[in-house]
Length: 141
Image 1: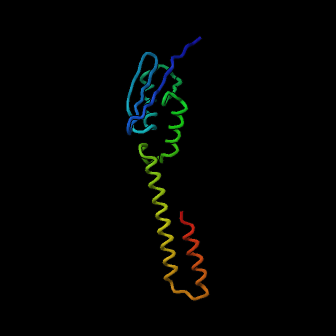
Image 2: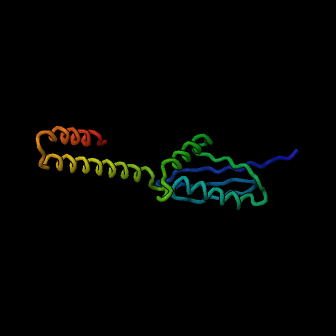
């Protein structure tokens, strides 16, 4: 029977960075990375150094001693991080983007309402313009 030495990657959130410790057959390496996604990538590199001769190896990734906690944190980071931004600022960037989009919609609605209110129209078209302005203002949000 063939025994397999376990390889573990342990992650610790340290201010803005993550500390990664990879333990394998008789070796342990530690490094730091900005963000959990970069830390996961760095763990793969450390695994190659700890167990270069073990092809197809299984690595257990742990956060707070739990593989589930690591998986949940990693997936959340992957789902909230746009591919064009650094992994260290996903939530702040998403909030900023939502606020900017909302502000643009509000400005557009105000502009449309102002243009509708200032445009000279006859009485027959007045109610149509008023309904359009209300509909546009109501779609903001």
